[in-house]
Image 1: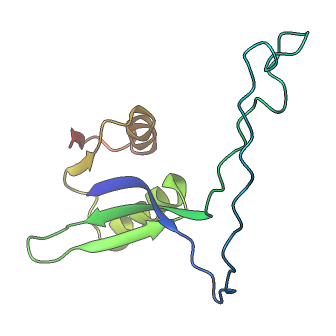
Image 2: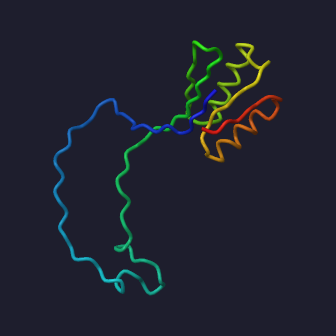
Image 3: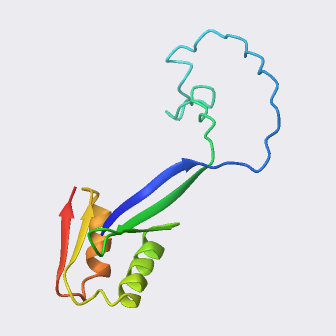
Amino acid sequence: MAVGHCVEVKKQKAHRRRRTPATPAPITPPETAAEAVTLAGEPSPAAQASPARQRPQVANTVARIEPGSKKHFTLSGSGLGPVLRFVLAFLLTNDLLGGRIHVFTDGYKSLQQTIRAFLAWHPRVWLLLD
């Protein structure tokens, strides 16, 4: 079984409005370092960079299960918790808990710890780093 965490894709809208070309903002001279700091020592609001416009994204966690050499199954969910529950349900339904469980994952420590904690009851879980 391989578990990938947070595969992010751009969220698509059902319908899009046409945009008109944006008008360029007027160019202003940069502030000096003295003007960028207030008396309290905090950056002035003008000196703080405005956050870049971020597109909405959808994060999915994906698990690929290969119980045999010729077939595989892909499970996808909104986070690691739901996907691990899907994996457990799949393993229970298909009577696959009798053997070893090999989990391939990346070096993300939080992901590894969550998988280890979730499958701590099983005596033969092997966590392999990709």
